[in-house]
Each structure stands twice: as structure tokens, then as C-alpha cells.
Length: 215
Image (cartoon, rainbow, N blue to C red; front, side, top):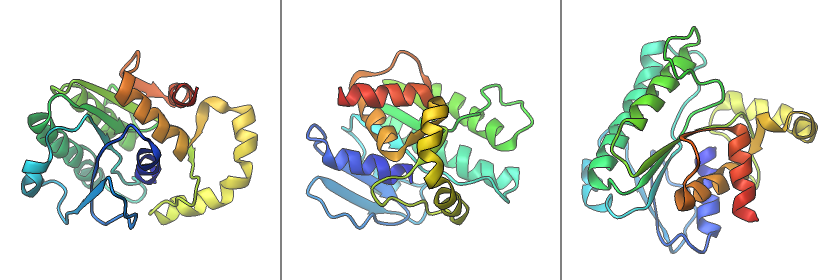
């Protein structure tokens, strides 16, 4: 869902010259500056090695819900996959900025009781240790999908359908804990262009960066 949001913002942005979208399925959004590569195994980017250099940023939006998953399975999808891609990109294009979408409540110590928060925290720490030009961890809270974007996870689709009418209320009462797919995408572009004052960006930071991008 976040990937759909940032792709939309990249396609609309005049400064973005070329987009290489890598995933398990195509976006079905034909566009002159979009190149898509569909891979069954995203841990192996060797077939794309010649295409990976020269990009200014990677927006890493792959992920899954931890609901119903064992820690070992969740770690394979979250930590192992992310680090496999990140290490490949760091070798191919060390001058890029790497932005990893984590989540509010992520545990940087990697020792907390919450399984998903521990694994996300370990993943963040490992990415921050790689030799990119810069790395940033995005920790959004509740993300309201806009512009027809939908989650591929059934649980989240149901949640967003139920919660959508309440979003204006939450935005008014707890603005630091809610955002939108549009805001996250714009914030990513802002960070890719200008950086950010810190590596770990919470929901309030994301909204502020999105506002700066449209100022």
C-alpha cells in the first residue's frame, strides 16, 4: 500500500526522471518513466545487476503483517529480504539514499516483548550500518490510503474500510499518529532530495516533511 502511494507521487513529480519498480507483481500503471521488473524471488537480484546503478534513492516498501506468523517466518520476510536487497544495492549504487518503511512502535533495542517490533528494530539497525550515502527509517502510524489505493492484505483492507470514516476525527485529535499514503510518498521524495535532521523519522516527522515538500 505504501509502495503504491510513493509510486503515485514519483510518477506525478517532474523532478523524478526514471523509476525502476521491482516487485512480485506489476503495478499496471504504464508510464514513460516507469520500468517494472517482476521477480518471483526478491532475495536474488542478480538478473538485474546491470540495471541497479545510478539511482538516487531506493524506497523500500516491501513488507507483511506479522499476524499469524512465526518469528522465524516473519524474520525471513522482514529482516532477511530487506538486508539481501539493501546489501545488493549498497554494492551497486553506494551513492543512493535508502529509505526503509518500518512502523510506529518499532523497538530499536531488538530485545522487547513484541516480536514484530524486535525484528523491525533489528532490520533498521542493520540497514543503518550499510555504506549508503544516507539511510532513513520511516515509522508511520495509522496510514489512510488515498486516491483509490488499497492494501494487498485482507486484514488491513477490512481495517481501513472500517476506520476510514474516523480518519478526520483522528487527524484532529491525534495528528501525530496518523498520516496518508500521499503524505508518506511526498515525505520520501523530500528526504531523497534534501535529507532529514535524523535517521529515524516518526509519524510527526513524516507529516512535517510532507508539508515541507508542498510548501
